[in-house]
Image 1 (cartoon, helix red, strand yellow):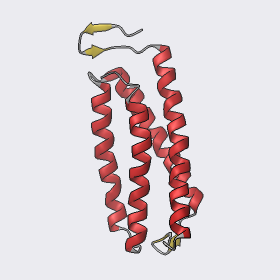
Image 2 (cartoon, helix red, strand yellow; image 1 turned 180 degrees about the vertical axis):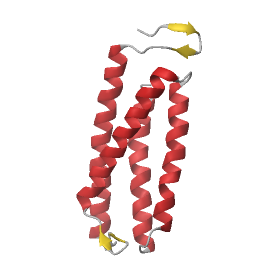
Image 3 (tube, one colour; image 1 turned 30 degrees about the vertical axis):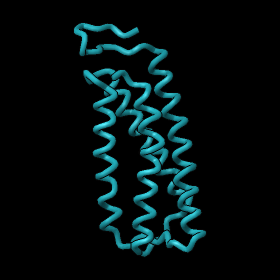
Length: 140
């Protein structure tokens, strides 16, 4: 159960809300990983190169990195759930900023324009899946 010192400051979260957050976050990470790998495979099938800096990115790599960074986002949400006045707002603002920042290397990387666009699309797809799934389980 949440214990409030002041109406705006939550000092603890309940075990059930933490469990719900972790479960939803892990499911969203898996779904996002599958989605980004599927988008990469579809792009490759459509003729978009997955070569970045002269090195091919394997399709499963999209899914693996998506899951890893989604779990990092989940860890961020768990910290914010305990420490932020408004965890949902803090999480959404932070993850939007991080998603935008994640696009910068895609713009600058040595790759074909279509490859850059595909990379950016996978970042946006992952965020569109993971951020709402986690955010809806954080207190406003």
